[in-house]
Image (cartoon, rainbow, N blue to C red; front, side, top):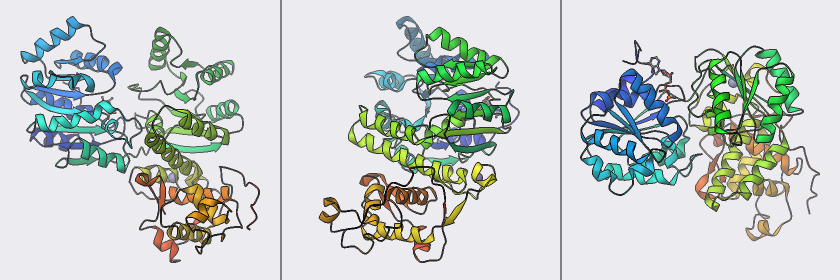
Length: 508
Ligand code: ADP
Ligand code: ZN
């Protein structure tokens, strides 16, 4: 039916698990083949499979594709006219559907679950399951109501699927969706065919031009920019330089966007210059490069956006340039946003993890996957592995920095910790009595900005951790101790990518 000869990745054991009535937590990168894991059991099990998805715009496409293959699929969401919705509900009642896509708010509407109970649900697939978590990068409150599925349908197997979830998010998915008995299937989030590189920004457009000219002169690619105006500028610039570049952002008419997307999909060698409005559900296998001219919001977003390159498994590039200015803007955007304090804290912490990644002197892939809780050896396929950056022996600095975390009781963030090391003269430090600890003022050989860089690099290397529940305090972990005990050396980069040293503060 699907035209495949074999299963890929963990599809087969996942399908077995669901067919035998069990629950599953599926962690696989974009392009890993998650859909089949619930589509096949939906067809094989008695009744209708229900897939919960927040991406209303994509449901229709998905249903269309399935219908063409002969799967009896339909979707229910707010974009549907009442007559069509009525027809689909009758088909559900009459057992004429194998698979229903439904938006979470529709599923949890009063009465709908009662209705569904009469339609014999075969399974529930919760797609984009990271949306259930406050720690995720795309929290959607309506997802939290999905815990009710377990109570209403205790015997119906449930799958939660995501391509992007760090450890706290994974734990949240399990807790909120009551998936304690689920088997976890994780192929790992690595995309080995993608080469990662990050460079400091000088002139974004001409750097981009050089990158494309030297590496991907004929290829299709995506270039992400933060604002609509910059999208327009870069698209025009590339066209002037003779490339086939198209803009895409939410300020364009739906028709223009659809036309550009269509050309990107069909023609060879089109470069799409876009805001993050572009990409969800775009399944073009031979995208050879994804560039960011401003950093993404988080490492999850970076993983997801760069993951649109090289879906065919052939080599692809993820190339990013960024400047201090971008980072100031991103911080300010969070502060000025509508989100509540907790959410802002989460976003700042995600930004901090991103900076750590930007600044790391060691393997990028190691830092990226480390963020998702996976440990790997240096990859040999990122800028830092391919041409190692200049480093210095930062062992003593690391010991001071980690010991400072310990002396201040693992309750403070990077800024405060840097102040203590620099021996800053302020009330907060005196109030906590931290002008009395042994690490106060032992770091005057470097500026506070340099100490912040040290902390971020330690974080990126996994040599300390962040406690989200305690205002992003840095904490020690099991990997901190070998450094503190002098059993392990630490290399830090000579040219911190981030802030230049500010004037040294005199210790008073
Ligand atoms: P995800 O939802 O994990 O991003 P999809 O379900 O969209 O991934 O599948 C990604 C791509 O892999 C699609 O183009 C799909 O057709 C293809 N695919 C899925 N399963 C198989 C399989 N068993 N054999 C070959 N290709 C597959
Ligand atoms: Zn590497």
